[in-house]
Amino acid sequence: MVMGTAERRRAPRDAGAAGPATGAGPGVPDHDIPAPGRAVEGSDQGRRGEPQPAYRQLWTDEPARRRRLPDPVRTAAVRAVLVVAVTLILAMVAFLCTMAGSWLAFPMVIGSVAGTVVATWGVLDVWVTRQVWNQRHGVVSMPNSTARAMRRERRRARRQERTAERPQERIRGRGGAGQLSHP
Image 1 (cartoon, rainbow, N blue to C red):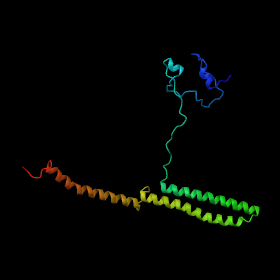
Image 2: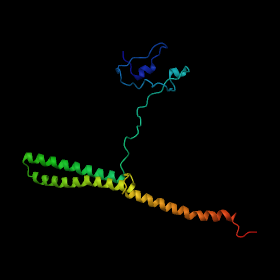
Image 3: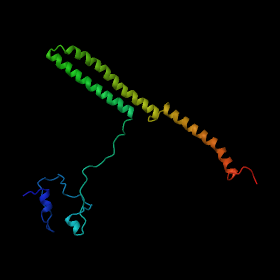
Image 4: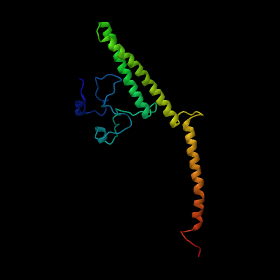
């Protein structure tokens, strides 16, 4: 006899018994079988003072394999995917209309040709947007990178600000606690 979860919880347990058998088969995780090493509150063994392992988690977060695309690149990619999908649908409808001998075949062929041009532009837009973003934000480390020059200019400006602040700090340090003249 195979018992369900409710029957197993109500059934009295033997101290020496291994536990009720399930009809799920080998290798299939059972949610009533606790994961080793954690305690469950309110269990029969927990009442006797022995910690019973807790249930395994159903969902485990894994770190992403790749970083997320920047917003402008992702927007261009979504736009390109939509345009390519519409173009493929137009091409399929044009093919089916041609096979059926419908009058709609010619306008669909013209539409699919125009869609192919727009889809090519969309894919090139993704590529160009990605290259521009990489160039501006310094992801690509190349000697002629615009981002490298911008970082160099920012470092130079910070260095000049620090050198301009040094004499002011020296003047404040000598003056004491706000005295206007020496006694």
